[in-house]
Length: 228
Image (cartoon, rainbow, N blue to C red; front, top):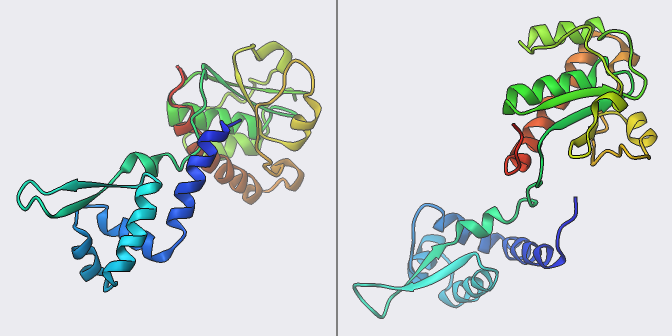
């Protein structure tokens, strides 16, 4: 996922502005309501000249806006700009119609990831393997059952039979990420340890937890695309 240099520069300015504890305290103070510089100085026990300096940095970064009081026209109020804080997050993925999770055998991690994605987003998803096994691993079926995931124990498939040109392909194992260098190339890579190597319930629970966390992070970034 690439980001325009200008967007990166804007995000870097915001991060730099928030990197000072005093400026972060001012942002915190403005999160729920507006305040004048004098009110900020009193609330934070900070000299007014220092408040003025920090407010200028925050204003230049686009985090704070000034407005005149409609009562006492000489007074200025500071207002937080929430959109600037939202810009700290990486830009969303675009053009996402279906998410396909790929691992080597399509017997554990990719299956769990697809089931998690379907439950989290109700979006169109699939899973596949570079060398698919004849069935889903029994411990993967068991962990899916424990977490109420819908998983077909016989539904394995090869990447060539599943992946389409407009899919967002996520490799959930290192081998698949490194092997898929042709037309099917993962856009994202999740280095999730193989639970089959350890073959314990604890290893499969750890893989489930790792995948669930990653799905939760990816879902908002892909929400602007059509995941249905």
